[in-house]
Image 1 (cartoon, one colour):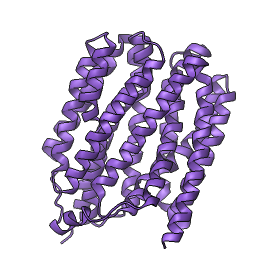
Image 2 (cartoon, one colour):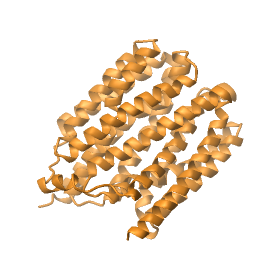
Image 3 (cartoon, helix red, strand yellow):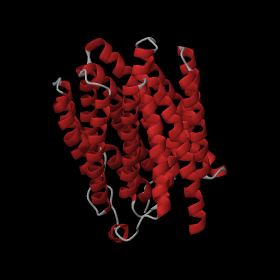
Image 4 (cartoon, rainbow, N blue to C red):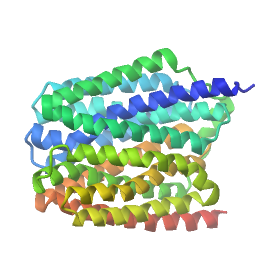
Length: 391
């Protein structure tokens, strides 16, 4: 027997709060890491790639392992708490060291574990949505919109805190939200039941080639976005000498605009094919990155955020649901794979941004973003053709 609509709404609101708290932690940490490594620890830009590759590879293994455990019946709720402990421990070390080696060690062990918070939160929410027979795309879009809301607040506050009290202050606020999220799960979010026969089915359903192509397209989209966001602080502040609030303003602005785009994706998917909508998002991304490469005044960057918001709103609002539809019986695996795909894109994107800056400038990283969106479109076309052949 399904719960009443009012009970469903109350449960859905729990996951909305949890997604905001989870998103705030990442929104404080991720935009600052490039800046933290180069300005806070005074290491060469190429060290960005070393840190990101090491963290991502370690995180991939841990997140996918935990995702498989969730599919086999382990509690996503408890796995979320475990991952949050890793995040908190890593941030404590980040806040109290000036050594790149200590940051690297904490990253590949503790923060890699902490990176599993997002896929476990997505798995927990998807399990609830499946148990309560709600609209999956609408639910996922709302969760992603909550992440964008967190990114509307996190980066501006993070850069403001760095400017006033340093990186330790920003990381301390991230610790506060991580602790809050962990306590919220412990005391308010219930366990989600998975039927035994469903657990058995997860071990039988193999991922087809089309699934991996879609995953590659998601990686390219994440790579494009990461090259831009990694380069943005140092490009706007060091190379263009724009005001110190510029990176936070732009990240917060695009997060604000993309929220209604994400929420509207459910209605758009009734009129248009999800794969086509994802391709349209990449076209908007391509226009945005070419525009950013040629921008040099603050108002240029501000106006172009509309294209960025449409790109990322459609990309994030549809991508997760589209991947889950490919393997509906392996939600833990697909949620972890989606989150890891985003992280692989982050790894390639931040590494590419660091290499480009080492031998050129951060401005040219946006051209790399444009190339990544073109590759995403090509891969998505291959995915669509293969899906039609598979019937």
